[in-house]
Image 1 (cartoon, rainbow over the protein chains, first blue to last red):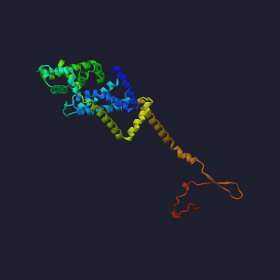
Image 2: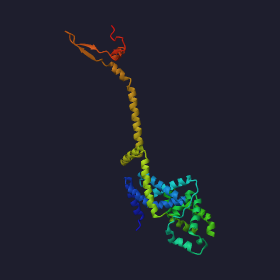
Image 3: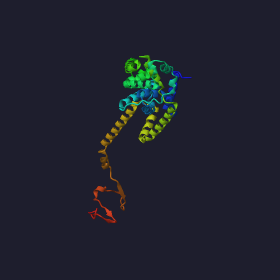
Amino acid sequence: MSETVEEQEINDVDLVARTQAGDPRAFDDLVRKYSPRLYGLVYNMTSNHEDTNDLLQDIFAKAYRSIKGFRGKSSFYTWLHTIATNMTINFLKKRSRTYKMSLDDVDNGIHNDPEFIEMTSAPDATREVNLKELQQRLNEAMMKLSNEHRAVVTMFDIQGMPHAEIGKILGISEGTVRSRLFYAHRQLQNYLQEFLAA
Amino acid sequence: MNPDIHKLLRLKRYEQPTQDYFERFLDEFQERQRAELLRQPTWSLLWERMTDTLGNFHVPRLAYAGVAAAAVVLSAIILVTQDGRSPAGPSLALNDPRPTINVLPPGNGDVRLPVSSRSEFPPHYVLEARPVSYESPYSF
């Protein structure tokens, strides 16, 4: 049975307190818990698995070094996501080489997703394209967005976070989150116009 | 937004490595942490320990600056006070009565002869039992 948000937060508070008291195993539990989710966030912003792996190591290392200063004013989840987003945006600003998309590691679970089945089985022109092409087109469109816009699209559309949570993580108002999303969606639609019209 | 784009974006959540990757990731993280600890200089570890210990007493961050400033001011006061006192030191020594030796001449009471200070006589060195300076210190 999955934990409720409150249960998750209580669990995090306990793990954080134990880490602050010097128990490294408690931090291991936090790494286990949050690495898949943070992986999704970082990967969808960088579109590169190697970069994501390195960044994720640095993010958890920074979190571990800074955890003594964490006073619980926000949830650990928000705090960790803020570190991850800031570090990823800083990394992207420095990155000059072109990104590589490696889709070989795509989880097989996608084949059971009703949206995927719907999109790939119906005799519509859009739905005839294979998964690789779908992902490639979308990744290319995503990488054309600015880092800040890609961050909100990743958190809202891919990870399903509420506007308020995204606002807290990025340190912006909910209104700004909504306007960035609106602009990013319009951009994506323009980039994928040809593909969608086919 | 076009519902197809929304669906495509939702499908991107499957772009995840397998569970094995995340287990290996934790091992790699622990290894890196240990390696980093070994690379840290001793002073850094000592500083970390000290701040940790002080942190346990819930000392606010500004207190560290306060203590450092107080230490600087205290050191300055001590230095200034010592500098001011230094001219008085030798004068006290000069005012001290010179030490005396008791000599007992026959028949009389005690006579106190002053012991000369070293500065009243020229230096008189002796090398291998022969005086280097032949100038008699007691030339009458």
